[in-house]
Image (cartoon, rainbow, N blue to C red; front, side):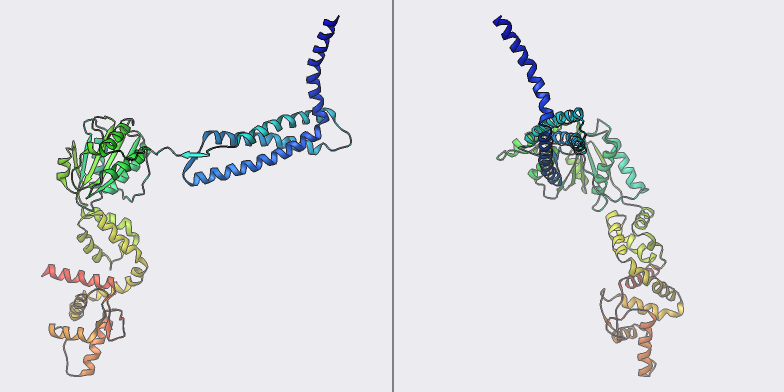
Length: 460
């Protein structure tokens, strides 16, 4: 009998515990709701603190840790459900109580409160973020004009060679200003779009005084490799070579080389089929010394290509008739070098407003010089151009020089001679810097004068 009684007591206890728990959901309904609201407020504050730290890490180009992102996701999902429970509780304030609904809300509030409590505890992170993985490609801003045949020919040949297993080391050479660096940046951007040949492209500037450790550091940085302090040059080269061999495919561009460099001293492996090297240099012999498997020469632009590049950079002012002789003169001096043409075009673009305002005056000036009867004015203009740029010229000195050259004549009357001197300056439309007794040629007028002088020299 005692055994039966003990068994009944045990069964009763087992049944009462879950029943008691269910009753507490109803009895402690109000406390559960208040506890839920308090925990929600604590969780919201914790969430804002974590969001601030995450945003700060992203400002430093770091990525939040995976556990942090998962925690933020769980918080967002939990808050949605908990807020819905809290809203239901706020609406349940009538006189006619729905005990079934209260039981349900109280139970959900208690369980959700336990989840929130755990989230608050789990929100204590030792570390919020980590450094981003090294990018395989880094887009590089580059200016390029389509349709330059000589450039496209070299680039097509280079891209074809990169697809050929026979060419491991490729040399690109050409004189300074030909655009080697620009085209390497452009190649980098094109490889980003295709993302087929290489997983990583690393551009390193070598310069005339190569620093092997600096080159190693730049390559290692792109690979996410950090050298241990105190490692010797040989050990650093070994570490870098080992790391590069872990890359399935990688292209290393050694830009602006002035003399040969032992790739093994740097740590660039020659026995890794997935690693290709491009060197750029202005000295063809460097390509030979580096034992390149293919050498590509970048040629200067033709006259037509030079004008096309110039027009692309300066826009509509290239069509100004008064400017074209000057532009043609300067483009000849650029000798087909893209960097020189772009530099000249930029200078003109900066001064576009001034050029537009002077365009009418320049046209008038050039037209007036085309008439044989105005030979003295033409000679006077050329004489002005012999003075240094931006120089204030004393008009009497100009007149005396003209007299010595024979194209300014004195007719005996001092006043008439003075009037003639000032009239010549006004006819040239040359702005005076210090009153009417001084002449000061603006840059563009002086360029026109130089152009005319050169034309006369060529004809003679």
